[in-house]
Length: 247
Image (cartoon, rainbow, N blue to C red; front, side):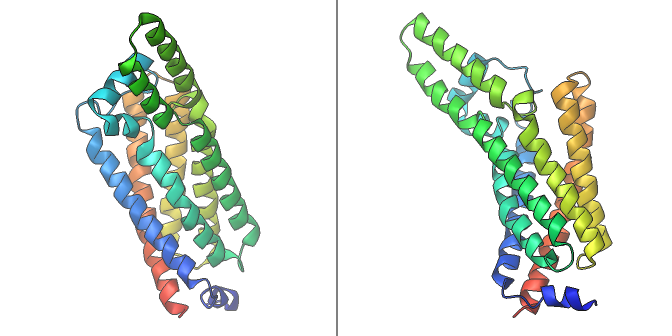
C-alpha cells in the first residue's frame, strides 16, 4: 500500500472512523425502516398530490406516518447521519485527495442545511394540531393557507426541497469518486456509491419536475436505494477496519 495511504490509517482520528462507520450502519436501519413503512396504508403517496388539509388529517390519524412522509424517514435522519460519515471519509482521504474530499463534505453540509431549513414535516405537524383545535371556519381557512405555503416551500420532491436533496446526492457521487481514486476503499464500494447517488439524483429530478410516470421513477429510486445500502455496508466495514488498525 502506498505510504500516504498507510498514513491515513495511523492518524489519531480513529474514533471518527468508528463514528462514521456507526453512522453508516444507522443509515441502513433508517433506509430499511422507510422501505417497510412504504407498504403500510398511506405510506406511499406521489409528491404534490395531497392538500394541506389532507396532511392535517394524516397527522391526526398517525403523526409518525405524517412526519415520515414529509421527510423524517429517510431524508432528515439520513442527512444528519451523513455528517459524521462524510467527515470520517474526509479524514481517511485527507492525504490522498483532500481538495475533493473537502468539497464533498461542503456540498453535503450545504445540502443538509438547505433541506432542514425548508422541510415541512414539523411545521405541518404543529399546524395540524392548531387546525384540529380551530373553532371557526376562518381559522381553519387561514391554517390551511399557511399549510399550503409550507408545502410549496418544503414538501419532498417538489421544487422547494429539490436543491437540498440533490446536493446530498451529488456529494455522495463526489466522495465515491474520491474513494475510487484513493485506493483505500475497494472499487466495489466506490461503484456502489456512484451508482446509488446517480440513480437517486435522476429520481429526484424526475419526481420533482416530471410528475408523470411516477411509478417508473420509483424503480430508479429502488435501484439507487439498494446501491446506497450496499455502499453503507462496505463503507462501514472498511471504516471499522481502519479504526482498529489505527490503535
